[in-house]
Image (cartoon, rainbow, N blue to C red):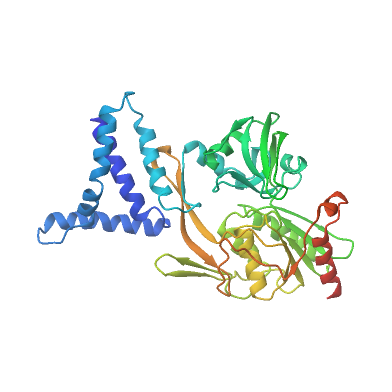
Length: 407
């Protein structure tokens, strides 16, 4: 009886995800309701064509044949039905060949959810989990990762001397995260120098202030965003008010090494600087699109603005920078951004079975530029050399100051 019940629930879960898991809550409910209606109508009228439910029953017949055979004949009995169910979802999403669409088991989901909420224990780096190896997008400012010299595009090829070749990025991340005060040794491959080396990092409790700001000696306001989290807009607005009360001649918005975050936060943050519409377009697979416009009453929409970006600027930070550039609201200084122009929904699964992360759309800049895997090209391309780093010189920041001072 337990086996039959689990089969029914698994079958319903797979159908449910295939039909509606990639969409927002309202659409998902409507879609599942129509599925139930099609079932009931097919039962009441034998002249109706084959229903969606019957088509799916036929489609999944080989799946259940395989499931039943493994369940009854696999050498190590009893099989773990929960792991089989999770593996089925994982394989289904992997078949889409989209690096940003994946299944997260309960542990992965909890760990992936913590960074945008304010704090966690780890090394302090934004990472890309979708490649052959876990890759550093950017170390967080003043984090153990930054202090130990990790750089964007560094690849983690081993953790504590254990080769992680073939492991998913989520599993590698779990090995890196750990209790504050403990050490983890990462074997790093650095493309720029083609060197492989070990670095031992002491984990810390990572506090993530979304926004830091100050007035520079040149009477220019400097604002740095580390991510686009739950409290970013609230923190930004408060600090902008304090800065603007000092009558600066311009603002530098530093989005370097900003790995992104929530779409809603990106729209809110951008609206503080941009009053023109749109901020971005969200384009779905069926051709439909949503236009995101700026929210009213932005408090820094007129003051001269320069935005700093680099290879660690991704996703939500590219939304903000792209809107500012397209509307001519400010200029971009730095290096090519990361190039993540897709939108994912995280759908929490029932019974604490983790979540699925599904690419539901691609986003375009106001001028309808597609930046996925391309990134944004700055108006002023300024590299930071090894000598600059050794001498603690920031030519990108210096260029931004020069531009605003000349204005």
